[in-house]
Image 1 (cartoon, rainbow over the protein chains, first blue to last red):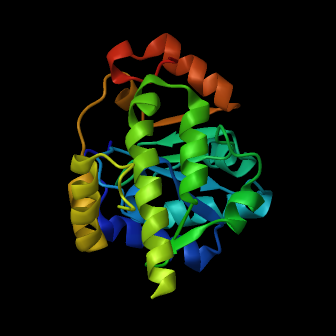
Image 2: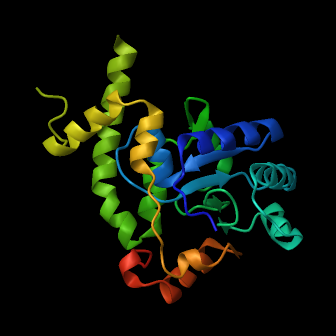
Amino acid sequence: MAMAAFEYRQAEAVRNAFARRGVRYLFLGKSGAILLGFPDTTQDADLFVQRSRENGRALVAALRELGFDLTDNQAAEIEQGKDFVQLKNGPFDLDLIFAPDGIERFEEAWERRLEVEGFPVCHIDDIIASKAATNRVKDREALPRLRAFREYWRLKQESQASE
Amino acid sequence: MNQWEGIPRDWLEEFEAAARRPLELRMRYAFLRTYKPVLDDASFRAFETTADYRRWCEENLPSWLGYGSV
């Protein structure tokens, strides 16, 4: 099982392998917020993946290329697009989320996505909506700071646009 | 009027400091790895629905991990 923290070079490996296979996905959760500049800590990389048979097949191929040791049954569950898949059988841990709380459709999140150094990231509004909808203790605790960051991020964007 | 006035000062300082760091460094500071009981004890889990996953967290994970409902 992976015990090393997720690192930039691993995020690059995900980005590049997924791009080669044409996987449609978005960084979500705190890992997405961190890509947008949110200073906080987390343990997992959360990926919101478009649910379709074709995308599922591409995803499994990319995961195997990255070194995830998937049985045929596990691969089938990913291809099928089960709502939530937790992977700890590769070089780093990944959570695959096909149906996050608080976001109705992948396509809508995709339209609102942001790109950071080639990483596709859910919009900060979607990250917050998802965290708020989970109603978990750890997410509730993170929300005030995350909302303050959204305000900071929004003002920075406006400031940069007016320059 | 200070445009940042709605943001607590200490948080603002942290946001500003993070904005000055390259992404690679931000990620090095952000991603940690510690053992989480039960959660880390299986190499693969798949849940049919997100609700199933939330329920499993409620019923199986120690409450102090924070995965339970408010």
